[in-house]
Length: 401
Ligand SMILES: Cc1ncc(COP(=O)(O)O)c(C=O)c1O
Image (tube, rainbow, N blue to C red; front, top):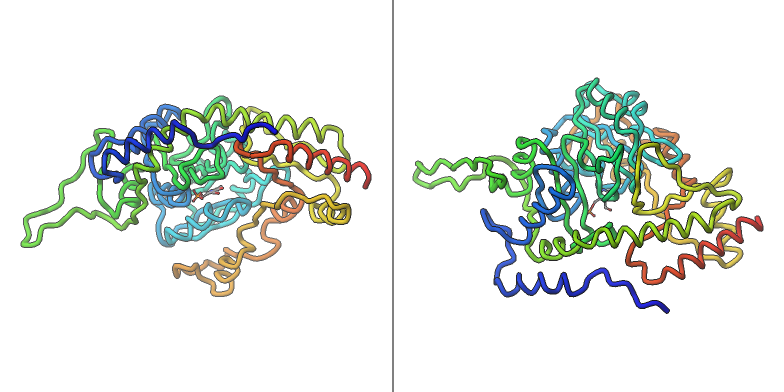
């Protein structure tokens, strides 16, 4: 058996050793450390001006929304087919998610669906590059411009993916990334919010740092008023502590350097899957949008004329284990069912008459979610032979059906 591929190795260890020896793992104000080095290197990698490394991709979604000025009572258009963090972040900043339907081939939001979902107080749209699939960004940006919507990209699953040669995360007013362990690269947990707009960066920073403006990039840091009997410390707005530690920064710097080699392994696994399923009945290869290059997070194998549950049932009878199914339609989750019943969001924002969270809301999403098998192609997959065996077994089941 091939030696197990190592996600972490001496490079992370060496950086971590330096953090331990420095006796400080805190971001702090004005410190130059692995966190700030990672911000600089990721900004260069992506071609964006401002990067804030933080504690998670979920925090990144919130900070991106706060950065573009979303707050209580605003409405934000979002896909239901995503990890819940994309829509939950909208709830967390006090706003109202408005779900728009998706392309059933990819489960990715479309410009037409965004336009159909426009509501009176819609101020932004969260575009999730699900599994690494970027939609037609030209038409999405055109619709956003027409309706004055800020575009926030959720790139948690879309490292190294491009549209017309430009990377995911460089199109919207702001974008977020995740460094959670299952992603293209990781610091265990962690994330980034990125933007080219200094005002968006500043608002995002305040949101992630208890309202304290420890900006970088030469941006002016306002001084607090210290003239009173108890001087102010300098908390200028509401915020959380979503700071990244230097232990995470140390790992993230090492991981970014390895991203191309991790991507290579992902691409090889996808090639293997596509080869194995080529010409197989009842499944179709992932749909690829024109003008896009993808490094899949999961490989979205599509079913053809049959549901995933029907395939699972036959597999179960034949003793072939399907990999765990990862597919969500956010508004069917309890948190949204409860909001629908209460007619208010968990943070107490009333739901307008035209906003609902109930089955049937996005027919393509509900149809598509039963017809995509998202296959994990994580670069660390200890046993790629196992994935190959499973794909071969499934192909046999499909041929015999
Ligand atoms: C599309 C999407 N958005 C956001 C997140 C949240 O990232 P994190 O787990 O780092 O909070 C994830 C994580 O799986 C994700 O897949």
